[in-house]
Length: 333
Image (tube, rainbow, N blue to C red):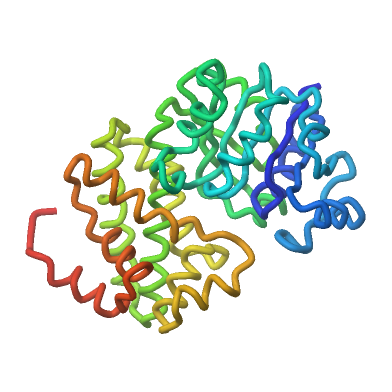
């Protein structure tokens, strides 16, 4: 029986523990919780009331706050922590991780380094782990997946055999995985769609209609593809689950944290006010700067990302941002 350790007990990490407990293949699943008090609460109530309330954790899922205990005998480590915490968490896992496969479920870029999660993991854990790294991404709200609602995602690795192995390990009755070897495209799409979701939310917060949202999603996908393809991604990845699929979900779904941030900004609230009342992380808030830095390397135009960055970090009003996008020079599609 394969032992899987999930690092991070936010909504997605907790949901993955529930989802994988239903996989066709039997697993021994451990959930590592950074906060000892929260770990005790989850063990006692079999519910993560802080991040995924109302959904019970199976008795078979073991909950730990000690990294060494959580990783004892583990074959697969699945990281579901915010990108800002990834380096510290994976660094703590390193002494207990020999011979382990690493799967990142984080949709973001590392602040400061601008690294994708697979790149950060390889750097942290040393080159010997690089061939055994994969990422999981796609349109997957945590609560819906945990409730057993049909969900389809992408499992990407440069090692095709590893991708197939993990696909078979994780697949369940209502959790379908497609393999892909375009790790770069899958990860960049997962990071960029969060920024577009903030823009989509701002449109709603301003009271704009369906025309604006449709234009935003379409031009947002074009912007995502420009950057990803410039770095070597395949165009079809951006039109798949990790790209278009996750973009549509995050820009339109009521459970989207990034969309919520955009809605509140559109209504006139400040970013400081919004984040002060959010328990969970909206990765898009921290992704605009790394994306613009990457875009500058290849002189890629990212007008939507630029405007979202100005709203988030320079105090620009969403109304002015929309105006500036609409007044850009006319061009071919």
